Length: 252
Ligand SMILES: [Zn+2]
Ligand SMILES: [Zn+2]
Image (cartoon, rainbow, N blue to C red; front, side, top):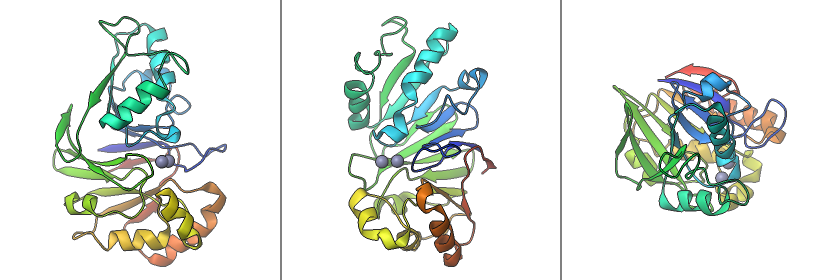
């Protein structure tokens, strides 16, 4: 699988954009960043969006992507995939006809640009060539991580999470783990309160895995603490650990 990082930051500043990852050319993992990173033709190849949770920094580009597709006049259609809680939140609070039009009825209710596909945690489903399983993680709102398999290669994206257990039982063999680290270890109390990880908490999570992933790709850093977090991560000497970069391209 190819992974293109549209954004991997826990905040927004120039050069730091919220979570959005393009797998190969048509599958998005979260949609905190889309249109500011992808040209029209690239946006035109998106077919499915796996949404981890309803926080704005993971969903905010869906409405604008939908608008771009309708304006382009193509027959492109996009499936927004998530748990019932996440899809309800998007429908009720984002594309509700007030904050943004309801693109599940545009350009026509019969052939809308967006459709919602509800999935349940721990029930595997297919998305094109991918076999996907969602697993609940620990965040202040209902949230899941996704295990995605294509051919014989699997990646696991945690989305936002504090310390958790079940996802590690389901992880299996991984070509790559994409996992969040938001705060430095000195801010553990805040991290736990807000459902995030620090380098010290990351080390404890990785110790729960029976098989270490080939690569451990870190996302969602608060740029304000980037230097400290990077130093703390380096000190852990975790095999295969890399910090994701906005605009980065990876072959997994
Ligand atoms: Zn969040
Ligand atoms: Zn987030």
